[in-house]
Image: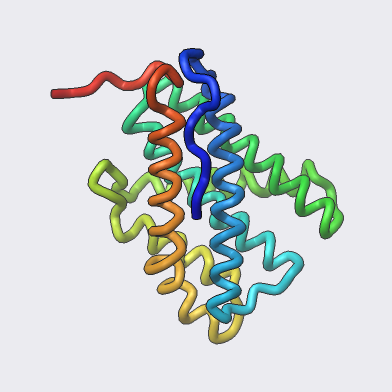
Length: 194
């Protein structure tokens, strides 16, 4: 999947919130693409609550990936501001879409997303993810989370779909996009170590 990852106007420092907005938009598209690919691979993801449960788990995963990329490239304060803004922006997007299509209180949907994100963040924190790539367990955790979303025979195969196809593709795209968004004068970055 192709995404734009360059700022239209260079030379002006971007705030963590501006970068988070761009990363949230890219993450939303990546999650929708993963859902579309999974359905195309003959997994049964019903339109309705299951559809949004799938998106929720994939978005939680992508926030963790973005946080690890920010950890490598940004100062501590910038990383915290970026990840926080990203989490809130994605929570808003998911809650608006879900409440518009399925009904329900957007604030309640948003709160449940943030609760799930916080619950998973502690688990994801135990897995390695560095410049050489993520730990096998990092992606396997996504597979197991998706297993809870799926039903019937799909539960058995969704882990492989996530680990072999959807997660690696999304990670590669998000890594490339954030490299572009964080370069130049975007933010105060972590100093290079020689």
